Every structure is written in structure tokens, then in C-alpha cells.
Length: 127
Image (cartoon, rainbow, N blue to C red; front, side):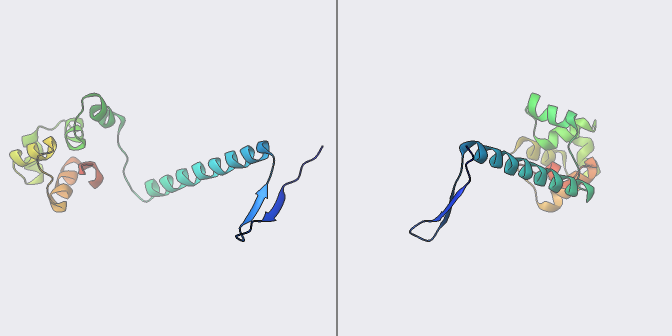
């Protein structure tokens, strides 16, 4: 037997469709696939526009050693806090406070840190 979707208008004027469950599941899967493709395309466009990515070693330092993103990028670059502070024109105490979460720093400070690490600005952002 062939079953076709049935259309009707609910009492409040909403257009409704009744269809077989397997048809609904197939349509839902297509919609989910299309959303995944849209998200991937958006991420590729951001990457093509120059947005940086995070090296796997930095992510491992964040996840495995529970480092802040700034500390992970600093260690990835092989810098001490003092060396990073000097490159960024900041004090080592301020870098230490930011890494520990005891301070955040202004946007200008975060930009200086990112530039000193040759990392994207978002790398110095805290959640």
C-alpha cells in the first residue's frame, strides 16, 4: 500500500502534515546532514578569511594538564612567563595573574599577549 502525506489546517490556522514515521525520520536525517554541511561551510569560510586554529598540542595542554589557554599557548611556544611578559611589554606578575585566572587584562593587553605568542587574539581569551 502506498501512503501519501496528508495535509490539513488545524483549528488555529496552522498548516499540518501527517506522514509515515519512516518518511519523517528520513527527512529529519537530511535536515541534520544539511545543518552539518552549513556549519562546516561556515567554519571553512572563517578559516579561509584568516581566522586561526588551535594546534593539537595546545589543546592537549589545556585538557591534559588543566592549563589556561594562555599558559598552554605560552608553553607551546617554549616561553617562560618572564619571556612572554618581555615580548608583550607587560610584567611577569601580570602574566602570572592572567594565567592563574586572578586577573583578566584589558582587550589591549590580551592583544599584546596574542601578538607575542603569534597566536589568534581568541587564544588569550578566558571563558
